Length: 442
Image 1: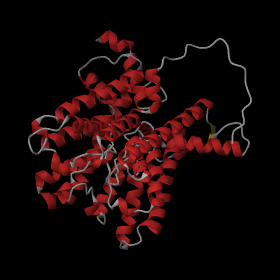
Image 2: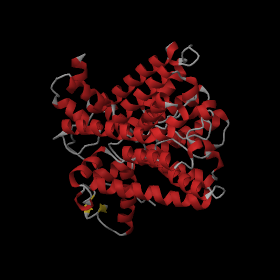
Image 3: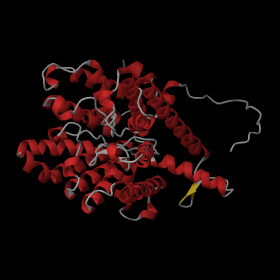
Image 4: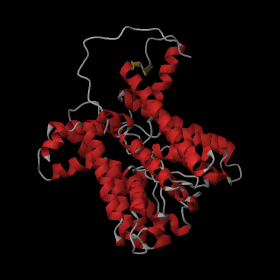
């Protein structure tokens, strides 16, 4: 077994690690004690739920609060925690706790898993990530207790607080609010400032990226000293929060009272970028509002975070490269730094992959299920962006359509390039190059 693992590349270890945890979670959710009725879940339903949990998506085929037992809900939140922190991060943490030495291959895998720029200090970074995750999640749970304990009692209120804190920080979107109505998410708390602020803070913190945390820890609020990735991630994240929130406030939620309208606009802008909670009925949005949410879901969070999507930095590089062409510059640039051609090519490849996969998946689902294309685009964007928001289609889909969503969730979490690198052998270098040809684009 050890020899087999040694022959695997870092990319292959990552995708097999996620697949293994998903399979284990599926088997646990099939147990009779995992469901409220004591019958156990069918394999297809268990697989969908486990994939959604490990890939921190939040799409479900059964209401989490009413269908699953306490044991089943515990399995789901553990899968979310593992998927959010990263299978490799959790595995290496357990390996380190056991007293074993972390090999160079394991360090390299960890570096790729969290999108770190260098191998040096990667073990210390792993410990930092785990500590920060626990601190944020416990703090979030403590702040949510005043919301849930008066409604549910002490023990159940603490359990609900911890579940939703982990789910929000890991950008998963699973909730136990089915007690207020199946698939209702947190719509009952649309005007609750405390819940809105805590959930949004957890989503943003989890989705900003582990390397950005490290920058903030090292350089405090001295933004100029941050690494380029942190500067771009923070800047793009702020723009993608406030610009859509302004649109939602003025054009989508005009029928709501002013306080509820404010919180709903801001919350929906934050959660759409891979968290999956919602405080308003999404079917009430216009097609323009739905399209904006689709775009936000595709972008997702930042590299090396608990969030999915094609990432904020990818969008930034694509736009910067467009500006570079418009202004006849030789390269894309941010904050006085040039972006390499390899980075631009990778960003273009990721964008193309996401667009092809989410559109192709929606076209198939729309044809098979005879559903409106825009609604299907919303579901596939939610899946590949590992968001979890839905217009109500997912529980009603057939097995083929669910299989497509499972594939998209998996692709969105492990990363398209990771899968490609795992499936293809690295180039050993070339001794000759094809002659260059002229090609006009645009």
